[in-house]
Length: 156
Image (cartoon, rainbow, N blue to C red; front, side, top):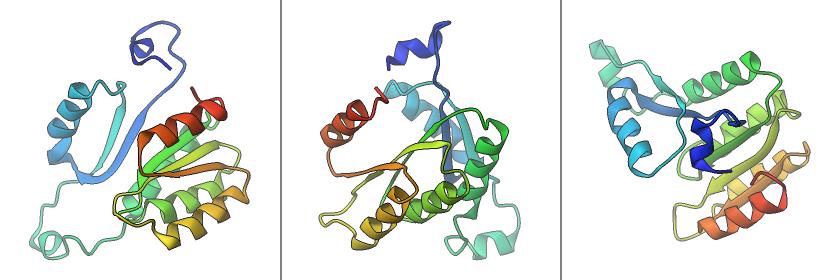
C-alpha cells in the first residue's frame, strides 16, 4: 500500500486511529502522524476530563473506550476488513481478542509490537486464542517481521 495512495481516487484503505488518550492530545497526534507520513485517518480519542472526580480517577479507568470505539467502527462499516495494530504495554491484546470474538470475519490480522526487552507470555496466550478464530496474528519487536508477515498474508 502506498501512503500517497490515500490521496488518490484509487484509495481503497480507510484508517482509524483509536486511542485511550484524551482529545486535548489531538493536535500532537495529528502532527505526529504528518511528521511520520502516516496515512490520513479518522482519530478517535476519549472525552477530556472535566470534573474533579475525573481527575482523581485518572489512570484507574478501564480501556473500554478503545473497545467501544473499535466495535462502533466495525459495526458502522461491516463490509470492511480490518487490521488491528497495537502494542503489549497495556490492554491492546485483550481488547483485540474481544473484538475478534465479536467480529471474526471482519478482522484480517492483529499486530502487536513488543515494547519491553522480554516477550509477554500473556500476549502469546491471547494471540493463540485469536488465531483459533482464523485471524492472523503477528507479535513483533522490529518492523521487519511485521512487514514480512503483512506481505505473506496479502495486506501489502
